[in-house]
Length: 126
Image (cartoon, rainbow, N blue to C red):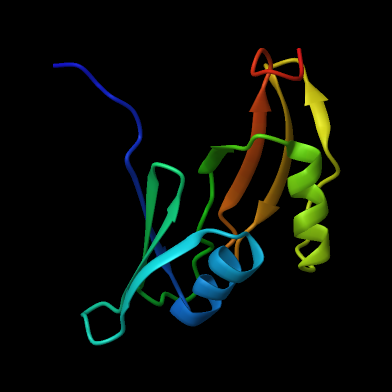
């Protein structure tokens, strides 16, 4: 068996419309489909080769996203930072870290932590 990489993120969310707006309109992911009649209601988005599926599964009294961090590669961290700021996304200032890249981070509406990184050695930094 050979692992080929991460193909899909499947996230349970409290409010599908809010999450679609965040990922598609604010972060710039491509929206592929929305099936509100499904049980649970779902949406599929794409970020490069990675497919992101959102399923509306409301919960109460529990904080989603604890201990889970997602890293997305970007070609230019600083340009993406500016895009997010222009879309009123609360985002950390670009930072170079000793663990291997320059990154920014945001929290989605369900408090999943998303990192957008340019790894050192990828034509630019490091």
